[in-house]
Image (cartoon, rainbow, N blue to C red; front, side, top):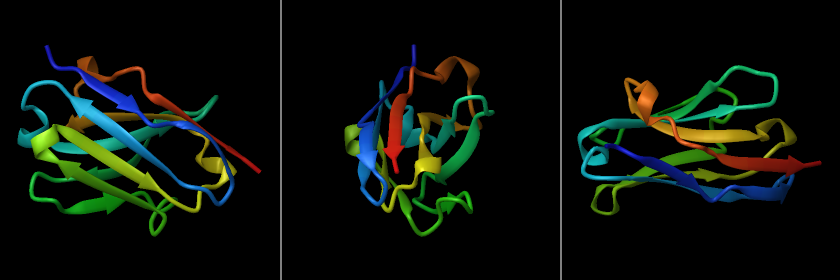
Length: 115
């Protein structure tokens, strides 16, 4: 049973930073491309960033230049460093493998950015 557990969210002022973590059970992380998604209240879940097994990265235009995704296969963990946060970044953030697996969605971690 694969589990992905997100952590690191919180309340931060606009312009601040947070680092999110996604801890994976087993060795699934080292075998997979991984991605971060987010869902704001009343909106659909949207793609934020992805990282391939080889370390190549892609970002949504809305976070490009502000967010950075990275992975530590030895720790079975994917990170999302979020800088220059904006109120519109407020959402619940989730991680998943790519392509996404429905059963792998976890509880997410809440990020709230105050203006």
